[in-house]
Image 1 (cartoon, rainbow, N blue to C red):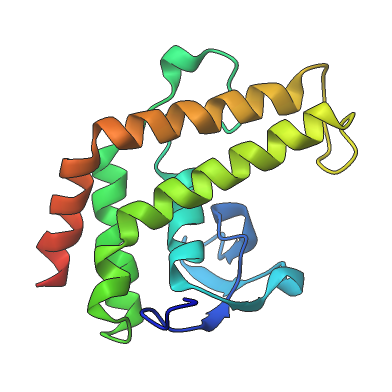
Image 2: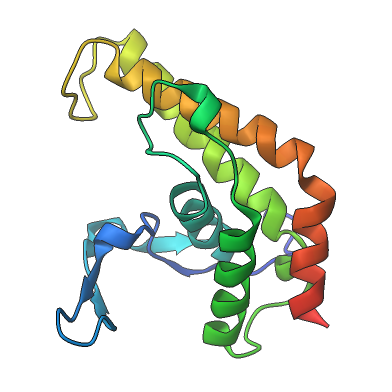
Length: 162
């Protein structure tokens, strides 16, 4: 962004399923909520955070790291839907950087959880001792799994961007 290779956009910055109101009868999304985090940023932030949250095989705070990985089927479905929803408004470079956006936002969130844990759990609400540490470990496990699946993630993005 500093080099102006990707544009500054309006971003939500907390893109996860529980920030979408869903119609109980149809199951369709009605609107996005939790708008206090909306600000200028990169489309990669919103895409990446959604992957971090929505393509994980386990809960954000899962203590058993053996249950944590990136589900490539969910990654595929979300990537397809995100690109369709953007209706060709993203630049080629933004789309090519989708895997990096996922990795970046997952790593950043892990660092935020770890920092909060080290500072005495003052920001994120916790429900048990070590809760933020578990969250951090989960995010770092996801980052490692993304790195091991990098080529597959890039191929999925390429499949929908051509």
